[in-house]
Structures are given as structure tokens and as C-alpha cells.
Length: 137
Image 1 (spheres, rainbow, N blue to C red):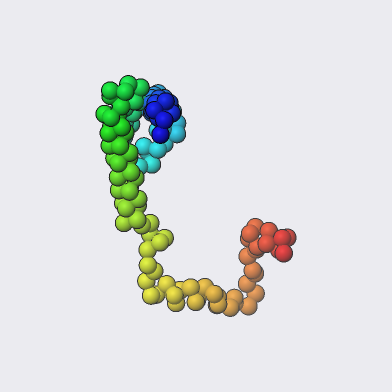
Image 2 (image 1 turned 90 degrees about the horizontal axis):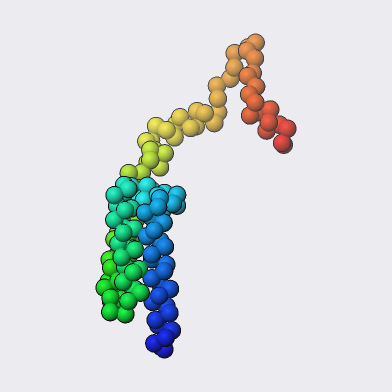
């Protein structure tokens, strides 16, 4: 690869990481949301943003570019690990709606499918959902 093209790519990545780090430190909504979803607090966002700015500044220098690349790699591995850890925690703590249903719920569903007859003279209750479904159908 041409040295000039490699240097341009290095500077472009430096600008990218400095701007991403500055956005984290400035509190841009999408950056805050990213850390809130994973479950990390603002301290982790400040550390990650500062490290990204340092790594981006290192990429501007030819002597410090290796250190910047190593720092960017560490940040990337850490963020992927935090995301995978969050995903594993979500899968382990499945909501009750996704939990296996007990056996008696099948009989309850069967009884709901065939309701008991109404006593003689009882009026049928008409809900707004039933009215809406008749209008659509």
C-alpha cells in the first residue's frame, strides 16, 4: 500500500476517533443511550470517550500511531465484551412472558376457547373491540 494513502487513512481514523470521543464527553444522546442500554454509567462513558480522544490524537503522529492502534483495539474489545455480557444477562433473565408455561395453563386456554353458556335472560356484553372488529370485517 502506498505510504501516502496509508497516512491519509491513519489521519482519517484519527479524526473519526477524536470526534466519537468528543461526542461521548459532550453527552450526545445516541452515545448516552448506548451506555444506558448496556447498563454502564456515565463514568464508563467518560473513560471510553477520553481513551478514544487519546487514541485519535496518537493516530495523528507517525511515532505514536502504534500506541493509538493498540488503544483503539483495547477499546473495541472492551465494548464488544460489554455488549456480549449484556446480551447474555438479558437471555438469562428472560421475562416471565417467555418462560415455559405450566401444564394447567393448557386446560385454562381450552376452557377459554369454549366458554360456558350464559344463563337464560343474561345479556351479552359488547365491548368496543368487538364493535371495531365488526366494522372492519
